[in-house]
Length: 236
Length: 70
Image (cartoon, rainbow over the protein chains, first blue to last red):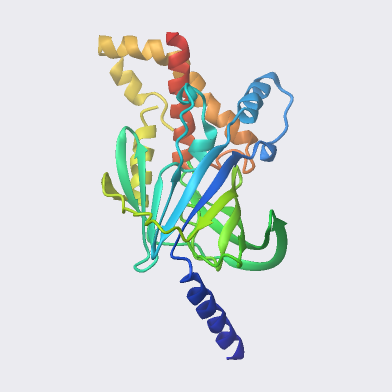
């Protein structure tokens, strides 16, 4: 009972403290984790390795205000970028993520198969908060782990480990993509093939961020989208 | 994955057949590319989601077609 009361007090404190931040813009750098790929010496794989090593970093932004947040890629104006093999964007699960923490609504607007979709997702991640601590920049961060379930081409379900380093010194529970619900801002997020790291942050701007819920696109569930992709792959 | 059933039907249509022959080398390379990369990735073969695999396939295919047209 004592533990439950303590936890309750902790979350109420975090929640009330987070009310002090009326809005914020958090910029992350996304990089491809070339080092996580297996080393190989064959000529064919050397070419693949070259593509892996030549991936460019991207910039993503998290905007939040009151009970809403959006997470999206900040477009750069680099000429000729679209002609390259862009693994970073593919594994970043490119799209605009909208979250409303009041009604737990999560919408992902993404372009696939020549169409714009509005993907609705109802389940969220269960975080395991660990005691591991790491200093990243000026922030003391705590480690949290969750598992993302993915369906592969054989129709098997696999679990993928996701690590978030968050700081309670910025107690906001919005997050990168659909990784929300931690007791503090995510400073670094590690997926097996990509990682996001905080670049800069600005809180409590006097101007409203005017967050808009995405409306353009065909409404579809995550499962329905997977079915569509499966069918489109059968062509090959 | 069924590699050829729809492609065989398409070969009966002359325009489609020319398109398929044109794209054949890119299609083969684009099919092998995500498979090779997936094997080297942290989870190994068959560790990617359908969206990731098809994303890499489509990206490579477009890139290959662009290179061939230059």
